[in-house]
Length: 203
View 1 (cartoon, rainbow, N blue to C red):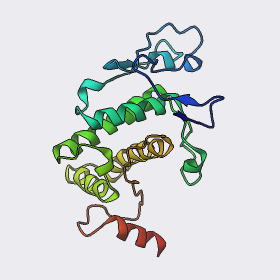
View 2: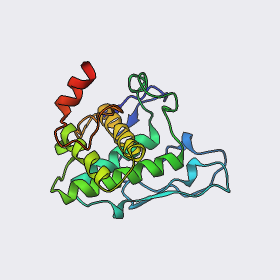
View 3: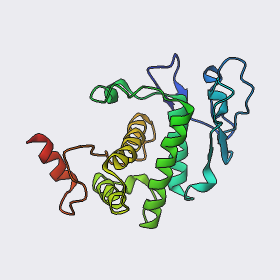
């Protein structure tokens, strides 16, 4: 199966264990930084960077919960690195959103994905298919209860929106629910549900 990504000239083949985690045409200039194979547990991102003074980021999959969640997130991370956000997803987003993001943003986004996956695993949720919109509202409430600011919660959910968007483009979608980013909604309210958020938005 293949995934057609508008920003690329050719469809992206789903990865095999030995598939490079960074496509050759995305490596900056004569950058000789190592590129891991898909099956490896650590993915260096330095090949995406052309500034030698910039922090060298990497993804350590051993820090993610094992099992199906890790498998699903690994594929979506690979799609984020090598693909781009679909244009239809960007239409109603802030101008700061871009189809492709830098290595540092990839690293930060994956950090948010890891925290989400840890929280899901702690609740016995072993697949993104069971991470519904209402579960994500519960996650938002959890972040607020940990004294995270509204802006920090929004950053977490923005990262989750990117996760959902790439899942939408995948030929083998995990089925994560759509994050409901509504600045006017108080997610700390225990009476808020996905359905009620949609009703507030339509009002």
